[in-house]
Amino acid sequence: MRWRQIVLLLIPLFVLAGQIAALVLASQRQSDPLTRLLARGELIVATRESPSTWYPGVEGATGPEHDLVEGFAQELGVHARFVVVNDIDRLLAMTRQGAVHMAAAGLTITPERQRTLRFSVPYQQVREQLVYRRGDRRPRTLDGIPPLAIQVIAGSAHEETLKQLHEQHPALQWIARHHIGLHALLEGVEAGNVRFTVTDDNELLLASRIYRHLAPAFDLRSDAALAWAFPAFGSDALRQAADRYLQRIRKNGTLQRLLEHYYGHAGRLNFVDKRAFQRHLRERLPALRPFFEQAERQTGIDWRLLAAIAYQESHWNPKAVSPTGVRGVMMLTQDTARQLGVNDRIDPQQSVLGGARYLRIVEEKIPERITEPDRLWLTLAGYNIGFGHLEDARILTQKAGEDPDRWSAVRQHLPRLNHRKLAEQLRYGNADGVQAVEYVENIRNYYDLLVWYYNHPEDLTVQEARRRVQSSPSHSAR
Image 1: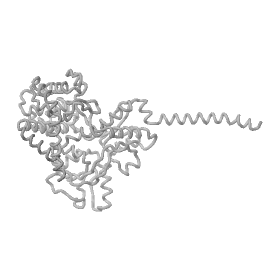
Image 2: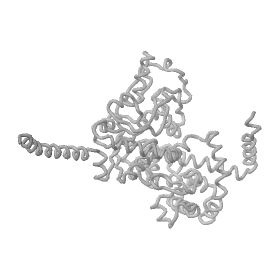
Image 3: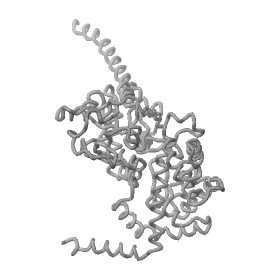
Image 4: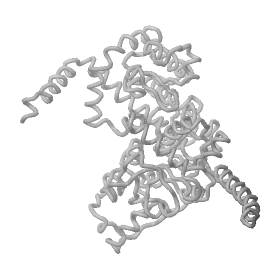
């Protein structure tokens, strides 16, 4: 009888305990950031503006980190909202505090950061390099660097690397700059106002397209890994989902294609670049040439110029597609294709004709007084960055007392469109003028090569013969 009374008394307690456990579990599920963002349909991401991360493009935001995050958000079935924070200390603080779901900003995994943040699996390996101005004496070791000659961003992974190296080089001293972006430091090195800075090799590769005197002195670290950062508290479900996504796109080749899209054309054309171009010239261009020639007959644009644009856009790959949906040999957006009457962007004939018509539309907006070849280069810049942004750059050129009708002058001022401080002076706002200059210069190189090879086919024959000799078993055996 007594045991029965005890059991009857315990039953309500067990029921109450079960209810409390259920509430706790429900509360934990509600506090799970992955559950919350799925319910809200929005992934909030901190990033910084840079050619290697996120930047405004012609059809909206773009950049390696942007495209990676958009792919992740699409996999989750949510919308990605980017919060651009160019102060690295503030960006990391917002991530630690949970003000954003994650940070995708070209962040290096470091021991100091791992104490307060969780990181995804790496998506890119980079080298941290000391940068100097080409033409100055190149330092070979840190021991040859004068005190305070190196300037880095305060709170950056590069400053953490210098702190670690200070143990081996006690005389090493540097200036940690607050509230400044990496490209401002690189611009300072180019201008001779900053003697040395530190950056990742992928950042330097992109920046050296415009700042032509930048050069790596030596590596400070060769095993740096870039990854996404997440708050250290709470559920780890979102980071785990990111790991699965990054591992999947690495395995299926999407990650490599994305990195190739942004870094494959960077820098001046070197031996490797020319070799790849010659290979595609033999293997891919012949099938597309009739479409370029047809577009020339319809629009009057040199088919070799259209081919150069297409090579810059897709490496002459009719099935090329970006994570943001730009696709085809001319990499048309869906909106642009619709305006041009292109029903199938993967169809190379439609893509080439559509791209040619769009280029002509931009060209007709250029003032008639501007003559060739400046007219062509300005048209290409407008094709890439948008005509409104091109006009902003021309106005900046004119205000500087230079000729806004000359590409050589405008190209010097296009990078100023990246500067946030000039936003109020720009009718159409900030834009990636650095990328626009690189776009035009790359196409000029490809166009020159196409014109040369088709005016001197014997040179291409020589290259083909040399390739066959070098790839022959007898040559390899030697």
